[in-house]
Structures are given as C-alpha cells and as structure tokens.
Image (cartoon, rainbow, N blue to C red; front, side):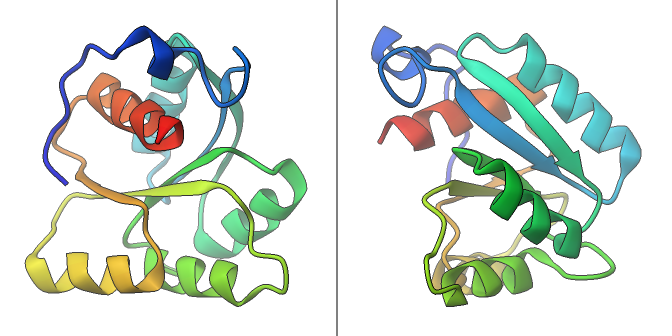
Length: 143
C-alpha cells in the first residue's frame, strides 16, 4: 500500500455509518508508539478511540469485546504477531467485520504477501506520520 495523501474527500471523513465516527482499536507492544497513535486517533476528525492493546492476545479479546470498525495493528509483537491475530480472527465462527490496518517499522514483499494472505486490509510503514496512518484508516473503512 502506498502512502496516502493527508486530505480526504468529505465522504470518507464522515466515518463508518451515517456520520458516526470510525471506532478504532490501537494495538502495539511499544507503549511509546501505541500512546502516540492513540493520541493521533483522538485528534483525527472522524475517528473515535475505543481502546488500546499491548499485544496480539489482548487484541483478540478487545476486538471481541469492543467491536471496532478499524484495528491499527503492529506487525511484530512478542506474544502473537499480526499474522497470528489475522488468522485467529478469520478462524472465528463469526469473523468480525472490522478492517485491519497492519503497521510495521520494516516491510518487504514477502511479509506483505503473507499479511495479505492472512487477511490484512491494508499495510503501512510506521515511518509515515500518524496523521497519514489515520487518514489511510479512514479511507480503508470508507471503501
């Protein structure tokens, strides 16, 4: 997925359904990145922060409890990585309807292919601004 412009059409900014903000769960084992991303979501017009999780296992529980529209999910985490989370979500009897945007400090073609096969809706580099990641998430949910 290529970097996305910071401006969005008004239709994408409105949120998930009928003007409701896009409900977001941020998952990252780095408390510094997770906190910064959570603040960016809170500052983003059209998004609402539902919660944060520090690992893959906690993410699976939070997705089931909070029912987010969008999960911003770190690729590499010590307990369960993004591929494991995606596979576990798709294996559920009733797979959640949330979109999953995977972020990582390091990406290559093989990793991207594995993430797509596991069910990632989008893949971005952590080197993008947090605002750009939020905008990409809004676009993803608006599709």
